Length: 301
Image 1 (cartoon, rainbow, N blue to C red):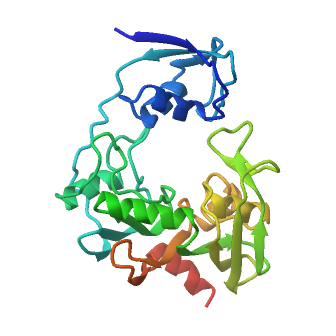
Image 2 (cartoon, rainbow, N blue to C red):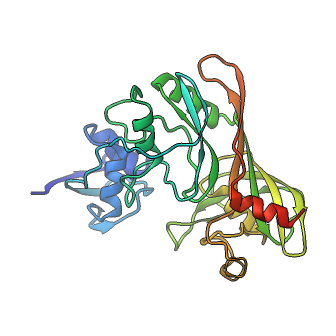
């Protein structure tokens, strides 16, 4: 049986629909409502909307509560390449094809599932389906992925990321040769392709500094320093300057990917520099470069 609930927006909220619903119905998480919205189980004025929709006064919200697939967090014995670990934090070298946390379409085999198995005493809130997560890497991006083992450490690290106090360095193989530059181009959800991001004049500020380390007449090895943390930021910015990441199946060039026989994006989170969330000790964690990326770096030597 599916429960139904209707209500009217009676005051100006200026909040995304998923956030508004999670605050109004506190027994359910924001992720739960994102799932309902994406599956058409939340209507605004009898119409389907996106989770980022911001309701206005007088809008009628209709919710069809339903059971989710089994998203109870399960510990899974997935090997982790650990770069650093203490009682408060852990950093791994994430492999390609690993999703960071459970979400629609990926309820298992994620980093969170592996984290729960590895960290038997991981401390997190019962309602949290992203325990320990402080930042994300795209599914096919490799490199340093940091997580917290206590709630306090998680809050402190999230704050550092939010305040842009963590220095992130990426390596990528790009098509063509970009100029050394700072790319400042706002990013927002693509107006038509809703799973993609795009350069949009009214989007959120996004800044990436890039430097070419090696190149030939076809490809380049670049270092990217993102100053902001927008979804798909480096990939979107490199596409914007006509130098997309080689192997990127969304923002890249299919013909180049086929010619080079690369079908996983060559983007690597090489290092993170930050203050330890509990001891305030300066830390720099570096992830070894994958064999696939090394192969292309050697071509440029």
